[in-house]
Picture 1: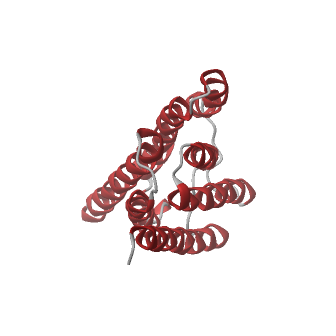
Picture 2: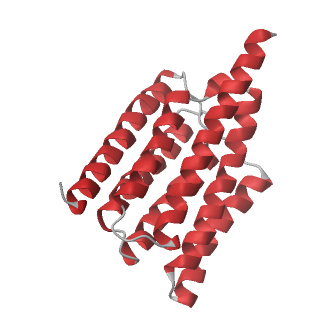
Length: 197
């Protein structure tokens, strides 16, 4: 297989993991088993979709496709979280994170460089994990371990599928993959700790 064939394979597998993670997650929301933090998902959806656009501009090619699919799916989760009244609390910090994510647009426009937008968006996306980390600390069964495992694995495949490697194309999937695996570790730790008491 050629390099482009491998990249296409990794991109396709990454999209399958994205869909495979989101379908049961969405069903969990509808059935009331999963209660995502709406603002986290709104931040993640916004940042993910904007990173997808920046990656395309910097030549990520088919490696960006899973990020675009994920951005749309993530925004759908935010809407479902609102619709099914999962966790719709909004704090001042949540508003700040959302404003930070949106601030990337004028920076990108003024600098005409997607790198600065990706840096801001990655930072905002990582900060968007804050409300979910807080939620998981107090209610570790409110989130899906399988989802965050698949999300972490998806980002590893995204890195392998990139057609052009740069900070602009690789920072977001590397950071979000690490954050997903960290959240998975926190979920595991808190569930074991609370089950033992």
